[in-house]
Length: 62
Image (cartoon, rainbow, N blue to C red; front, side, top):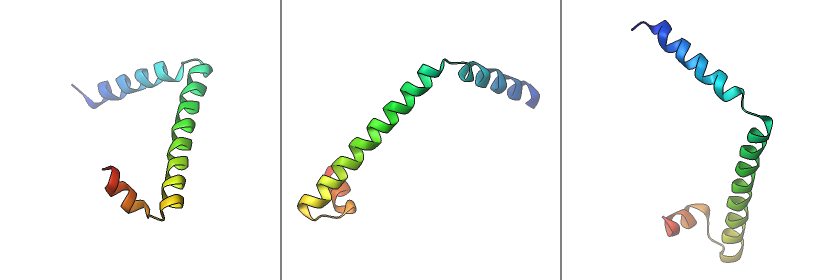
C-alpha cells in the first residue's frame, strides 16, 4: 500500500468526525469542563484543608 492510501483514509475519517452535529461537540466540551472542575475542586480541598502538597496527595491516592 502506498502512503497516499493512508492519508486519504485519515482524511475521510476526519471528515466523518467533523460532520458531527454541534450539540455533540458542545456535550463533549461540557463533560471535559465538568471533569476539570471536579479535579480543581478536590485538589483545592485536599491541599487547603490538610496542608499537603500535590505530590503528597497524588502519592496518597495512587
